Image (cartoon, rainbow, N blue to C red; front, side, top):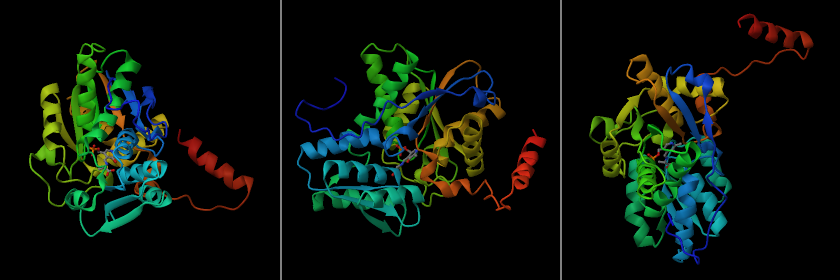
Length: 344
Ligand code: F0G
């Protein structure tokens, strides 16, 4: 009833979705007064929320007799497209910014046998290329400009409401190409229209300071941030993202790379939830608001944690030191134990 599929649509699925909505009591101590929840999208089959959109896009591509699919990507769309194309038995081409994709994601696309085309340019340029070339080459474009991607991704909003029994007061979400904030807002609005919820959340979108076009109000020519997933200067879903923020009474805010890495660390250490840097943007944003006294008391806030930490292992090494080898003796272990427990 909510998705554009018919009984004859061939479903290409890896049983994505149904991800946990976790409470975060230890993290919440850093955010006094907040009823905090984490929607852990890293638990999807390829480790990001992209799987929700890709099952739809690939099913419809198969239904329409597509001969191959293509996307531009900062990595996660590429990994999901590659996996679901394999599942569908359709060739897959992924165009990525050369040197701009975290190793875990690149390896996923390669592992699934996609043809990876690194271009000497940004994600925005890669997207321009595939939008231009896809029709001419008769390839199905599976970026979020494909409307079926958004349709699939809106199910995240449904699950949040199903788990809470209502809509949260605030949905906090990282924003890059702006497809996901568009999708969540559509999901909430549809659920209200259907009478399944009675209120709508405020949509708070968080961008990296070096790649924050929606905060600045204009495109960014050379976006730069440690959070490579959202290193995007010209979001394709600009208008619908602005509409989601405006209609919901929300808005956009930027967080620095230092704030992103600190929030990633806090989430992993305090709650056992490991995410890639971009996914820590909502947490970083809430911590910043708390520090600045701009977080009201009482609201229920759901943070969408978009991608698993194993996607980008190198980012961890920016804040953590690699452990040094020690002699293979019980005493060496004892010294390590003493060191740690002495400071507790
Ligand atoms: N978080 C992660 C982990 C992402 O991979 C992305 C986008 C976003 C957040 C932002 O979502 O673009 O819908 O606003 N990744 C895309 C990709 C661009 O190619 O994988 P958005």
